[in-house]
Image (cartoon, rainbow, N blue to C red; front, side, top):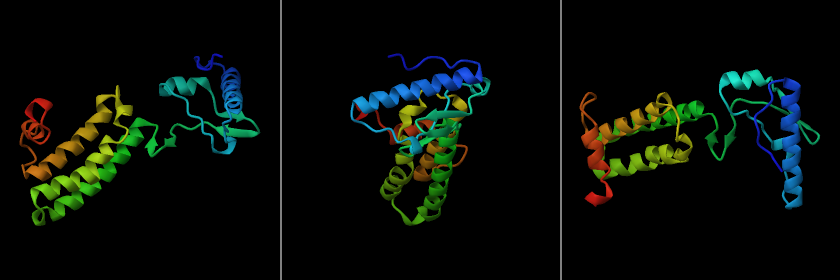
Length: 176
């Protein structure tokens, strides 16, 4: 059973291809005693913006439900549009870092590290393997958040070189 193949460029053919693919998936799930919930199913084309627009795909029929095509889908807390996902993470982490920065003078260095690892680093690390191959314009936002967190912990100035401090806080296996 061949499921994945390039979407046709004619909108009717593309819709038929995706509908056929979803029907095959639904049949396979039924055979394996799994259920595809038509009402909760979402469809997102994957490719460049031009390629997704070119396909002309707007609606897919799955069972008795018509599924609208969307440019981003949220699954397990990850927005499957990397730009939106990274923007969300950056926004939440920036908020947390501002709050931590405001109370920094009342905390020990160890407490700062624990707070940042709990509230910031854990968000950056969650599903970070999805960012493999992402453009630098996307990952630079996360690098900026990480650098800001290091500056808060080390009390260094905004324009101080951050790489040596990052190495001090993240020792390699050889240094352990």
